[in-house]
Length: 271
Image (cartoon, rainbow, N blue to C red; front, side, top):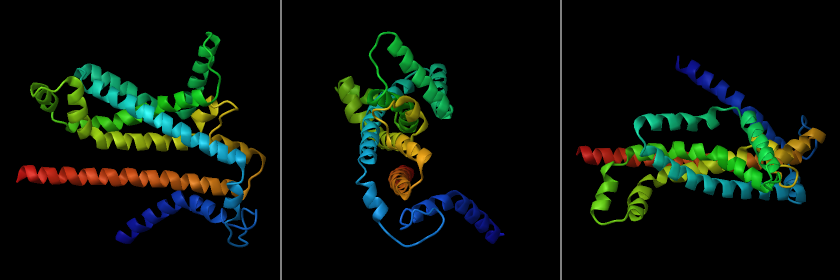
């Protein structure tokens, strides 16, 4: 029975990751062929980093990801603290609304934001599609991920810690910075990393909000595939996959460490 379970897991893993493995292998293929292996080379990576359009789009992607994840982390953390202090009915309602951008299809979010930006522009506010609209769009769908990572840490926080800090002479701002934030920092960091990962990985929302001047890498790759597939696309896709994989590993390691610390704290409290 065990061999059957292992075989099932192996088949599922192969089904999920075999296409990515093929993509990575053929990014080192000497030939442009997508089906015949002719030799190993780093040439496509070298040509990739001499392609000014791809380098510029990569810089746009990273800059958008950094700015949007930082802003979303600040807004999401403050929102989570505010939601935690609401009454139960209001908190439940707001959390249900918070889930909507996550479970909502990306194409609906992308089209909705595009129409919103068009409406804002028609109202007389100067807002051209480009770098600003992409950042605003990414902040919009990143904030819920930060909230959902910070909320569990707030639930674990001692409810009396904030009041105790105030009783000991701390101002509300000092209590927030010295008591609340250090305790929920693991959730903040995890939420920030997840926001960065989602921003780098996004295509649909970026496609509808980027315009033609500040296109992120995912949109540029899509445009390239519409004309002709080259191993350079395999190379840049491999780089993106490795970046996202590294960030996910960091998130999992942090969560594992946090779980171990909680277990250690429970054992000390029990003893």
